[in-house]
Length: 302
Length: 325
Image (cartoon, rainbow over all chains, first blue to last red; front, top):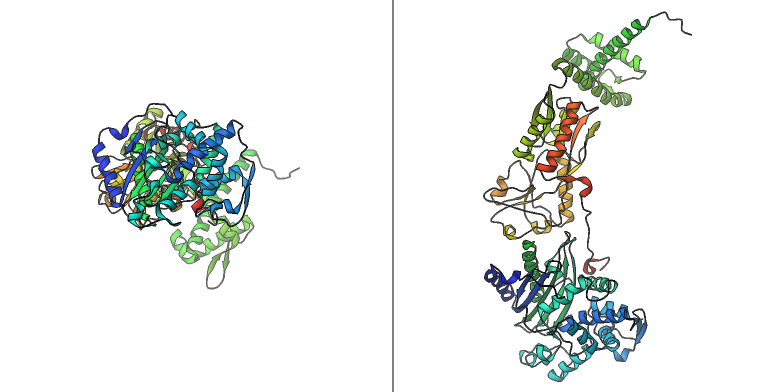
C-alpha cells in the first residue's frame, strides 16, 4: 500500500493522453474520473484521479475487505447462517433485496450476493455485523483518508426519499440536483486513486490474509454485470473482476483486469452523466473503453 | 536336412537376382496401376503387352494375391492391389534414391527444403551454420512450402526438410518440435497500429493473408482465430505483404520492420506455429548435422522456442456468459 508509484500518467505525452480521455468522456455525455495502476510495477495512468467522487455501491468492496479481516481475526464466522426477515429487506432491484420472503443463508453467501448482483439487503446485513466505523478505521489504517463510508444502503435510500418525496429513483433534473447522495462530501466517497490502491492491496494479498484476499478476488470475479468494465475487455483469456456503483447520474466501476501474460491492472472509473435518464448505455460503455485505453497505455510502458 | 545342393555364393547371387527382378516387377505393377490399361502401360514401358501381362501374373504368383481385376472392358485394382501399391511405390523410390546416392557419391550434396517465409537472414544462417558443421558436404537449399517438401522428401528429391505442422507425412521422421509465436502485421494506418499489443478479437472484420502451401497450419490458425473471436472477412493466400501494406488485410508472422507496416505482438500469444526438420528413413550424418544446425538457428536466429514452452490456452469464465446465464 505504501510503495512508491511511478507517475506514468504525468509524464511525457500527458496532454495528448488527457485529451483522449476528455474526448471519450465528452462523447459519452459524462464527466469522468479515472485511475489505473499496474498492480506489480506501480506504473499508473491518472485522469482526475484525486477528485472526491460518489462511490455508490463501490463502497461494498471496502465492506467486503473489513468483513474478511474480521473473519481473519476470528471476530465473525463467515459460515454462520443468518435469517433476514422479509419486512427487514433494504430496497433494491437484486438478490435478497428483491425477494419476497424470509431468507436464511451464510454470511459469506450474503457477501457473494452483495458483490455478484450488488444486493443491498445482503450489504446492510453485513454492515450490521461488521460496523461502518470498523470499515472506516480499516480504510484510515491503510492511509485512504479520502475514502469514507457514511451510510449503509438503507440510509442512502432514506436520504433519497427525503430529498425527493418518492420511492423511485428520480429522473427530473431539478429533483436530481438536490440529492445529498450525489454530493461526495455528504455521502459514501472515495477517489479513483484510493480505490485502485485498495484493489491493488487485495490483489497483492496485502488487504487481508492471503486466503481472505483470494476469497475477495473470487467474489469480485463472480460479479455478473457485463456492460461496464468487462465490456472494454471482450477476450476469453482476460479476466475482469469488479464492483459497480449506480445512482441517478452516477455510473461507476472499479476492478482488476488480468491478462494472460500475467499483467494485472487495477482500474477505477467514476462518471457523472449530464443526462438524468435511468438508462445510460453510453456511460456504461465508456467505463470499459476508457479503462481499456488506460490499460493499453500501462501495457505499452512495460 | 536340405537336399538342395547349392553353395553360399550361389544363394546370394540368386537372392540378389530375385530382388532386382522384384523391383523391376514392382515398376511394371505401378505403371499398370497408374494406367489401369495394359495396352497403355505397355506403350509407356516400351514393351509389348503380352510380356507385361505375363510379368504381372508372375508377380501375383510370387505375392500370392491377385493385384488386378481384369474384365473384358476394364482393369481395376483389387483390395490387395491397392494396399500393396503404396508399398511398391515406396520400395521403388528408395531403390532409386539408393542409386542416385551411389552415382553422385554419398554426402557430397545435401538437398534441403526450407519454408520461404523464414526470411533471407535465417536461410543464410542455416547455410553458414551447416558449412561450419559439415565441411565436406555442399548444402543445396530449395525454398518450398511444407506440403511440397513432404512430396519432395517422399519422392527422394529432398534429403531433409524444415516443415510446418500439422501435416500429413506418412513414413517421415521428425526432429525436435520448435514453436514460433507470430505477431500481427498491420498497415501503419490501421487504428490498431497505435496499441501496444493486439488481441485476435480486435482484428474482427479485417481480411487475413495466410501463406499458401501450408494447409495444416492455415486450418489450425483459422481455428484459433475463430476461438478468440476473429473470423476473417476473407482469407487471401499470398507470399508477400503487399495486401497488408495496401491496408486491405492483416497477416501473422515474425517481427518485420518495413516502411508502411507495423508489427505488434498478439496478446497472450494465442498462435503457436510448430516447425521441425523431417526426413525419410535413417538420417545420414550430413542430414543429422543439418537437423542440429536447423534447430539451433531457428532457436537463436528466428526466436523459436521448444514445444514444451507453449502456454496452455486459458478461458477466464465470466458469469454473464456462463452456463445457461
